[in-house]
Length: 439
View (cartoon, one colour):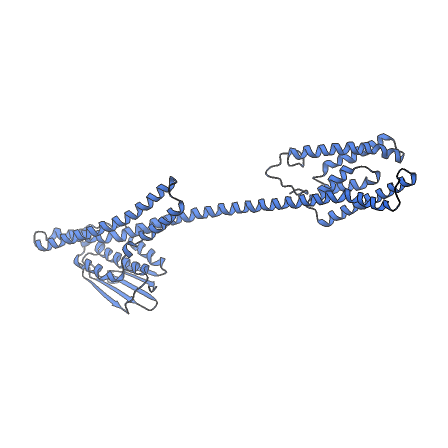
């Protein structure tokens, strides 16, 4: 910022210390007019002082040209105008210099001191000249009127430019403050927009992960049971036709259930994609897309018809038992209702653990334990070594290796602890503890 309070916007385009060519042209014009004025007044000054006219003219030209420096050194311009006040020259120089000084960023005490010096100088010169003119008879005024004339003249030469300069300087500083505030708000909005994009991208990635986890939990278990029943069906089709019919019915029921859950999930995703596509064409506001995406997210993570709950755990274990697994369920503590996300997570942990038993230890005896505690709910699924080694390979159940990761993510999201690993007896154990959130 310059001493006059002007702000250089971008790179300076004017010559020397001027920010713009327009400012340079204005100051050069003012300096030319001031030089001509001071040169003409220097003629009378040289006659009164008994000096050669060229000396007085050159002195006036030099003093008037100093107005070129008003933007860079306004203090020097005002001092020059005060210095030549006794010579009765530099009125334009004094007016413009005081205005520039008052509009600058200099301390107010310096501006007030120089304005007071200019006032005193103009008052003394006016008083002396008026008194001399009255003595010579050039002025026909009363002696008591001279102080009033001197004060009026001094105020007229100092107060208007100082007040106007202070007003322009204050307005300029206000505009600059508003401009800086607007720039700051714009930067904050850009930062918020960037953060919003980052959060949206994070939410999309998180939602893709959660949907993939849910699809894995929903589909993998039922499809695994279907494969197990199909293998059993193939084995007993000729020996026990009635059992084959029952297995075929179970495969059909599980397939229909899997299709229903897939259809619900894909329907939610298709609705979200439709809204996003219409929003890209301008038909739907972005806020509506955000709300729909949030709703789809909540449904996509298992909120179909309120999702599974612990009350359905016996049915889940019964499906595994029907597939030939020897599974026992034990419940400890007082049974009570929990928050929906807690019950869903506990159900999915048991479901995924049973699915892994079907995949990797078909025919193994399995124990499911559920403990209701005062501040948490704990579950454990432990299977013994398979009775027939290689039974899992005979079923040819594929495994993506994401089941344990998904279970751990679910439990950790609720502030719980998840542990899994092989047992000393050669089996496998899955344990989880989730903080209790009572519904």
